Image (tube, rainbow, N blue to C red):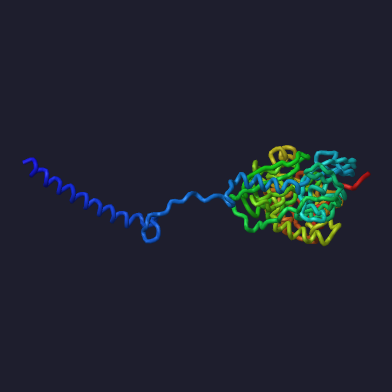
Length: 396
């Protein structure tokens, strides 16, 4: 009895196993074909790909920095001059003040005959007045007198020339058109002669616009900038922004004033074009002419409204450059620009954009609130060589 009852159970079990195996094979053939190898063979097991060259990103960054540092320099700039300083809150009256200014920035070697590239604002001094010489400090401690070879403030690029033996090799220049969001970016500089200062981040944006200025001159809007999360500290300006291959992808320029951990660099492809022009025009200290109104201006805040007893919107004029188009048109400190050519003005960025769209010689029709009343003012725009307002004269 026991043997006869066991046999049917065994047959049922074997039949179930065969059917189950067939079902599993059918399921696998329809659900796992994407992970199988060619001809539905089992997929090969492979390790995650290694970084280029079989080394880690950190190692590549360290090696890139080692190669670049000898060619990165500090630039010491000293300016003796005279500037006009306002003596009332709105800058209606000015008095001359003797100035002694010391500043530092960074740069890097780009040619074997001693050309060093940096930002124009590093060697421009007060109000965009370029210096003629500066001290170049190499990573080995050597200090060499450099000559400002040529400057284009419009793009914020300058060349400094040194004559010295045993110069470090030029840094290789990359191709900023091939950059991708999220790739590593390495900023190197010599802020305040703190040698070999390195920060690391990523490429975080393209074609950015950011306002910047120097003491004594109105802000200017720089466009087409490369954005990076690598911190660009004061004094890092003019230093190289590298990729992990050690190629220069930009020149460190400035940090966003409205947020933290956002830096901007001039893309290296634009730098190449400007450098090629400057190399053939030594002594050039001006870029293209810039449309010039001749005012310093600020947003209308609640504090400004209380000071002026003004209830509207617009942009307040803080001061007027003597002899400028704004001065000739009768604009004064404390005036509020409400409209330009019939367009309501609500921000400084809006006013700046309108001015930059016009050319020297063209007119702006302004609606201005002034001392409790409203008046219409027509201004014929002038030009200034790339923001040089000539309000700082060289002195002894």
